[in-house]
Amino acid sequence: MNCDKAITEVYSFLDGELTAVRRSKIEWHLRKCPPCADSFHFEERLMLLVKRSCAGDEEIPSELFDRLRALLHQETAEGTAGE
Ligand SMILES: [Zn+2]
Image (cartoon, rainbow, N blue to C red; front, side, top):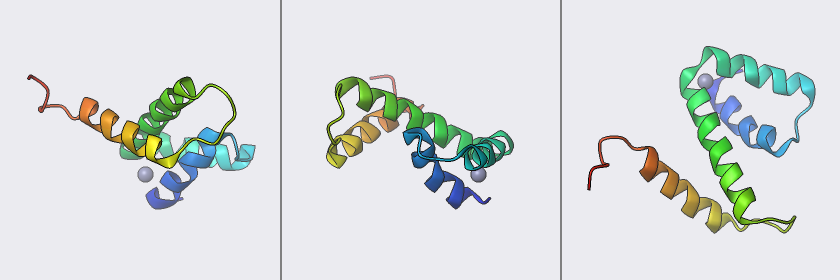
């Protein structure tokens, strides 16, 4: 599994849509690949945030995802904090 594939699968992983075999392939990749692991934890946080703000099973608007992603990126971008 390469990084592009891993990142694509991360979304399905977090949605719980993957089979056990595919999940273990991703976990294996994340263990060897810190950049992908970072992305995974980032998306995991994002997913948790979105779930918390949208209690219920309605469709989550993609612009909400985009806004939260931008916010999280700001928050995690070290070096720019300090204002
Ligand atoms: Zn990777």
